[in-house]
Image (cartoon, rainbow, N blue to C red; front, side):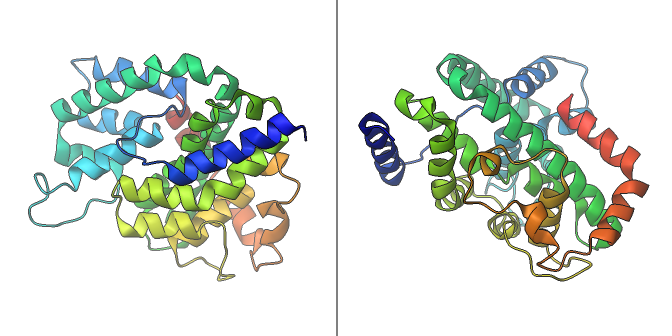
Length: 285
């Protein structure tokens, strides 16, 4: 690694360590953002249709849930944990306003993130497929709230999206994808915790995301974290950062050793292939 790269990595780490996250706005998928923007400009769209589109944009869906659980909209302290309920509680006009502000800001900054767009899009595609698998596995294997688990799947990599957006400030770091992936992986756990905390998401969702890299070995799974782990292990979309980081043992390779009943999961996926595909296609648009 040349000295310039070493300096960039060190500077990036210092920046992330010292950063005050503040009001969050960073790109996830430009295509998803444009789809939301088009949807909220449609005067005839209903709440149910809007919810299906909002859930595919990780940062927007997280902000809608935060708004639904705000003091102003939740005086009875009845926590909303999934996007469908959040959209109903918030209503059309506030969501349109929130979406317009967020998406326009993302589009405004999109050019400075061209160098990281491929990784960002691959990460978004994986989030979509993990969410779709999580929804079906939850319905088939558990008594958990499938919509809540799907939401957790969509937002589980928001920390990496944020780190990618900040990495664009360090051009030298972008010259080596392996170093970039290793550096982001090193910072992901702490950053994800900070981002989800800033978004004030329900504790159950935050706990599930933070637990999703580990597996209890219990089958059928009993926690959202275990469902997310299994979905990540069997997803047809590989983790783009773990692929580049040779230090990481892929979830698919470690899952069986940790107690995953691969036969059980494979049978469910085979029997639910059409449902999983339809959800993934709906989310991808």
